[in-house]
Image (tube, rainbow, N blue to C red; front, side):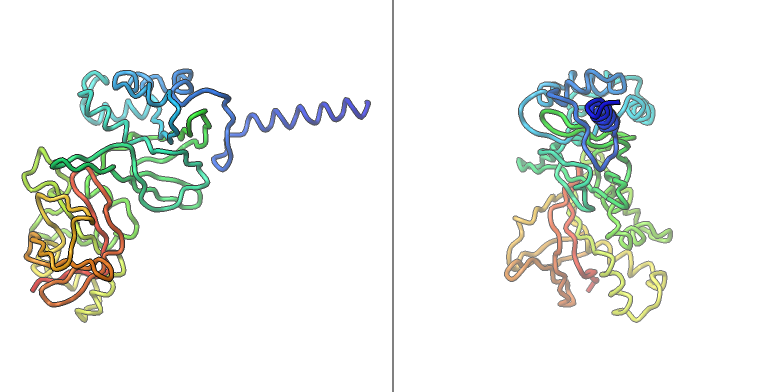
Length: 324
């Protein structure tokens, strides 16, 4: 066999192996097709394609702007419709369907290898009182397994389009409530344990999970203590276990972390600003860094801001606020 023929065979094998690769850590070359064109050419995305056409988002994903799309398969849509008691996409109001789809879109391209645990902005919007913010998404990446809002997982990544990236997801990503992020964010595990304690006389989960149209208390502003804040609280109170905190104290404490009927963005905070929580008044300050002061003159630093849900907003704090 000639050296030229050997080299030709070797090159052919390399090209075949490269074209078959679907590893999430690499890229799949798809040519010049747009995100929409790729979806429209795949039998696994017929429901998604139909949804995009119904809402007019097919034109958006067929344009020149760059996006990352989390693409639910046909089976993911079937599971979603069944769980909602719906027969088809036609049973979903067009505006609701559009907002749901935009919750699967991020501006700019994000390769699978670049995901890190944290919060990202989607293209869906929360509008309240004339103010608009992009709804957040919590991404958790552990050992190169990526989950979104604690409910959906990327099953195939890095389909590269002319105008962005497609990642296939196994479930529809619902519009998040405040509770969605408390459940999805590992840094809020202790808060989740607190609000779900069986003996609580207030059902915080149901309240904070409700839509604005369902509950006159919504939207909510939640000051969410990170895990270490609860560990420090045990030391401060001189108790060994979380269960050692009596129910009245825990219930009252949690109420001081919620403001009702308000989606208070960080930009609205100012020095000596009194905030009326469900439990009582606390004071915000911003000079030298945003903080909250409770009635005991204990100061909590705000360590992360403006995690936007569909029924409110979360700011993460480093110390639990205590009742007077």
